[in-house]
Length: 196
Image (cartoon, rainbow, N blue to C red; front, side):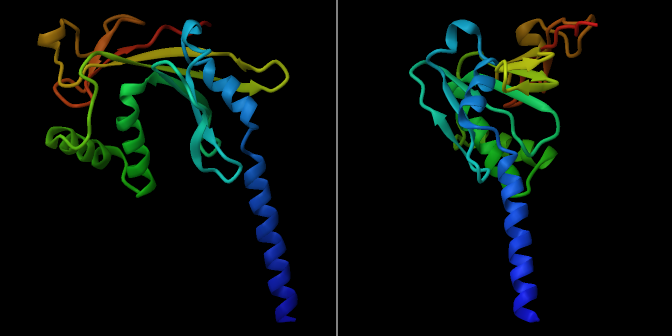
């Protein structure tokens, strides 16, 4: 009886594990989706990061230019891919490490802020762009993102409205503004109006 129960539980766990793994799109699909977040002229030589069938975050394709593209996280709600300059990679990977440790929100912000100020986490010395592409879903038939929407973040660590001339909030749809001014994560937000 006990052996039968153990075998049944093992089969159930194995089934659930396989179901979870099947949620991860194929490597070609992840690469195709992730590359669409990058400017077209930078896609061919960009590196792509994504997920193994087991859910591990890895480099799926090495790159030879300055761009890194990231596929949609199958464990998060909604569909979102991104691309960014390689100088942002330490910042991005550190965020992933901290979230894996259960550190999020303000605690994550404060941790990275202290590390940047201590010189143990390097931020880019020049303005550096993150391109975010969200959508309804990804079609494996057309290899296109359905209802794509782009927004942009330009990191300018420790910049302020006084040093940039940017307002601390948008006055009109799509107007650039500065978020988190005076911190390691100071950045220009550009959020174009969505098509109706």
